[in-house]
Image (tube, rainbow, N blue to C red; front, side):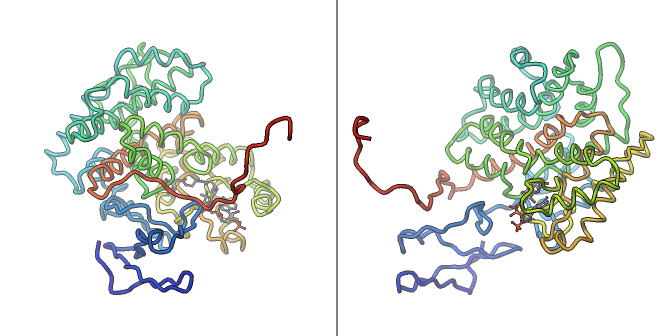
Length: 430
Ligand code: SDX
């Protein structure tokens, strides 16, 4: 970062103070207020952190006004078109696109970590069959720290790398096992001859009784969906992982915390909620009623898959996702009317003053569920796939934080509005 020539001047209690403005490689400058409380005795107040940069990062850049998303400088559209999820994972972790040899070695390392400790399979049997896969993911990923003591010393760079590879490698196995458990089918072990994504699809939809017929178009579409979900700056779940990691918690516990946060319908749970909403709307003639509900301040209903804290333009991931719907429908000869409903809803909303004024556009979650449903995933698995892919970003962000020499435990303050000091009143006198 660079100290800008601009300065920020603040007058508190009649006293003027000046603060540095710091510039990154692109995007908004930041006002360095690290000394503000010591200087003024005041905190800043920013619920939801709408105007707060929590850290310095070189991983992902978003320009919400322009609808730009870069991973280590590469536009998401180009990565979705030309790269693979394993290559994007390498890029996010290491900062540069890999050579063929580097990619082969990285992929082989990840492949060799896809098996789970055999005792973890019994962990699943503690859940009800109808447990939500995200509940299972929270539990099983958190439990990994009980099995891999040889990679939980975060001060050891080797441990950090091994635990990073284990988390990226085991998420598909854990997610696939959550699905198998929910439908009462046997778990399948990983097959090292398949790609990362092909292996996940076989563990999810294959059965021991016959060979699994991996559809190349499905493998490519799911791999692209993983790329689109890999990382996204300091979103709620990534910030959760960073905050958990700032206390020195082991990486498995930190990723479990990220999974818990991602589950919320305002965040990663929106893909499941969006498809459920589209199915509830049903036919295009019912769209206006839901648009009217979304605009009604007295109605808590929101258009799921619409709006974003940062994007005030079309989410570039939604653009790729919409194109992928058509590819999957053509490949699988699917014709789900819910896609037409989604296209029509988007068209009506984007021509409605309410959505235009509030700059509410489709986000990554609006179309993803349509694709995943066409491939055969139940809606309950949608956020589990989001967590599987976002583990790459969480792990990369966690590594960046842990290796930052300025890293300290995150500990926000508050504006206290509770009772001032008062004496205890014995129960007989209340
Ligand atoms: C993800 O942060 C990330 O990067 C997240 C993510 C990632 O990759 O990690 O991109 C993934 O979480 C995408 C978002 C998925 N969530 C949804 O699709 C749920 C529906 N969307 C909203 O709940 C909402 O848009 C948020 C949560 C996404 C963003 O909320 P903000 O930034 O806090 O904005 P807000 O709630 O203050 O809304 C601003 C205004 C409000 O109206 P006013 O109070 O100003 O009158 O817009 C309205 C809101 O009521 N609004 C909506 C709306 N989203 C916002 N109105 C109707 N439908 C919506 N979807």
